[in-house]
Image (cartoon, rainbow, N blue to C red; front, top):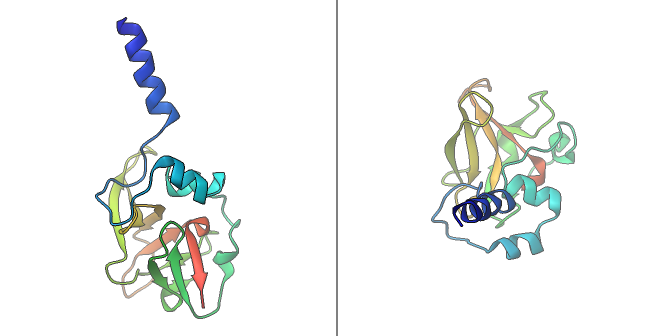
Length: 151
């Protein structure tokens, strides 16, 4: 009986990963609701902390004036005024809009990185690195699939 309980617990953990930033958040949805509103690729990035392929997002080369919103809840996150071409293949910004994002430590690749997520719904956006331009010296390296661009 113990083995069966252990296997059921292991299966539950692997079948339904709880990877998005921990709440509480203003916008919450069940797994079924997230699955219904997001494509498989979007779900993998926003809810399971995946990463899209470099150079796969058209938002990497987006040059128009506008605002980048969270794909999960439409919260305005980044201004095009703070966007720059980092040469990494992902949309990059040197700062977010005020009170738009949260961070947490990410120890998934044998080193500690800073994960950035939407402060309203917890959706995974990407990571923040210390190799960006002034005035902040930060590079918010984001998955374009996590964002919606509005002019």
